[in-house]
Image (cartoon, rainbow, N blue to C red):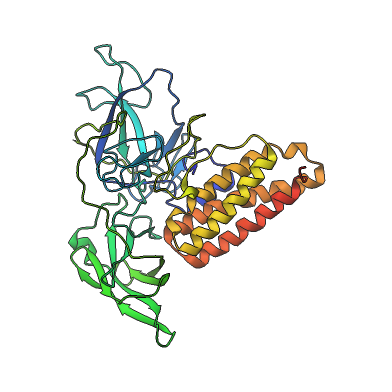
Length: 423
């Protein structure tokens, strides 16, 4: 999931398609009270555009925004595990359970900085406060940093990189469409009033497509579609402004959506960093960085309770056969995610596969020249298709996802063919 990593030229061309380098919440910053160790490992600096609307621009070097010309600003982007509906209230470095409501932790991308108590001045490196005490870590929400469902449904980003939505299918037979901004904050009633949508599904009697208008109910749109056999496949056509294009979002429900339990504060387990009281902070428009696939601490297994195994980061193996084996596993995981319709999660194994391909690239010099001519283009193709899977997964277009997956599989086969069979 190395969305915040340094990318090659091909990667940056693709990343402009995707809000996949990122996450999102409200404009409230949450602090982690633990003191920053002097020699702790820090995420690398990225450079993002401060202009609202250009959040997807991210570079690994200083310069000007390629879209608006503004000077890029430095930032450290980190991937953390937190509560899905209480982002950054709890900060963890690995999967587990939310101590607030007991739901599985989710990964979000946040801005990492250091500050002193009572000061609004932030630093991109840890240091000392005027009183000699260590500066404290601070995690701030980022636009496009949280693409996790808020109501137990399926979450997507629109092609305009600002609107986000979540579809839920309730036991009452109601399909509901929740609407969000780029910080995964619910749209106001006034903002939602400009949006129209309908739902297209197969009529169980005739087998033909049936279109059902979605009716506004406060901040969301909904329609009664009855109780369908699972998996229940359908797609929404959403028009975000009058006269604008209709955006298609595909949904496949394996079961009814389950609303997360109401937040009930419980005692956090030992070692859980507690967030400082929220302090008002103006949001800084972000590029779309994504969670990192940094490996777990050696010797420790990540807690995976309630987490899809395809979404758990794994260390890059040291040998080529092990890398190829993990690459085959990612192919199967991505196929499963497509079959389930969980498109918003597809970037995780896609980017893990991308990291494996780049690790294999370091071994291409060990191959004969004719095999290098197969391996190197195939690796570039897999990296490109991984970013396409990420972008189309966020947008929720199944046809484009399948096309990118076919490219991904073809590249993986060529990579495997280029490396000699191992005993």
